[in-house]
Length: 335
Ligand code: KG4
Ligand code: ZN
Image (cartoon, rainbow, N blue to C red; front, side, top):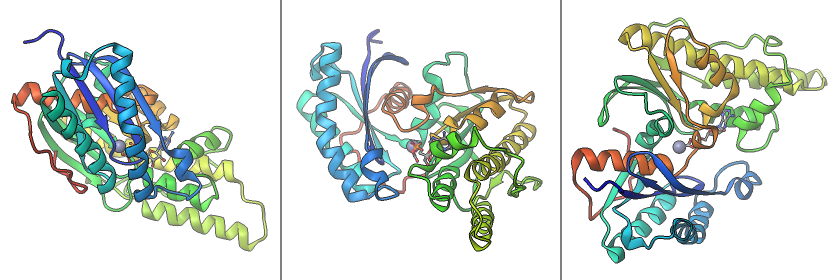
């Protein structure tokens, strides 16, 4: 095995253009991220067509910057790992087609990565002591699920949301409260100065014996509360509403993680995806006495290319194959 195995990771599934180079399994040589948040926040959400155009503008300059930073040429890479789904079709096409072209030109093997498997690897970048079996909570804008990692490459989906994803719930709640997109970081920030006990929002499915989530009812409860203030002509206590909403989401997530730990007997839990950056969730997971928690660094909770490079390298090592024809798949699900 080549000791200095270099993987170029490319992530363009949604609105972040990410490029990273990894040495061997988890040594990050460089990472670049071009966020489009400012471009999309004025529309209150991601505009797919616009996101794809931005990836097209940003991706190759970032690849060049990465190679320049570590002073290698593309031909010296050992693998290119690119997100092939799930995500926005236009965004995925830009990443995959660019990766295919670079792979052909440089003669470097290419591997397609499931974005969710990427998130699953994010906590492992800094955690050499996290070994399967463990439970992985993936909480992002598009997904909320608990995956039982039997071994790398052998995953069991043991729980998921019935409706909205946790990040989607944060984004919709923020819109109800008139806060800017993306809503999660905004609510997190406002919640720090609010009273989490000011409103008694429901904790969806807290006491059921199934590992499942539901956030649409909670969002509706928030909407009614806001309408009540509006109808009474009263000022909306945004900070308290944010703190109380965040408390309910956090309790719903931790209740089901506790249940998953109880059912499986696995006491190792990792969390990843944008919502794993949430301060209340991080506290709740770190302080939970039922299990030990592993969390990614804040910058690797949201979409990034390091996690894609890591998942791609791991998969390549296991399967020893590469794909000449990676097909983008916006609704790719099964890990
Ligand atoms: O993983 P990610 O970057 O993209 C997807 O794959 O979906 O996650 C983005 C989601 C958004 O819904 C955003 O509001 C949420 O993660 N998010 C947060 C926080 N930071 C990002 N939610 C709650 N608290 C945060 N601090
Ligand atoms: Zn993501």
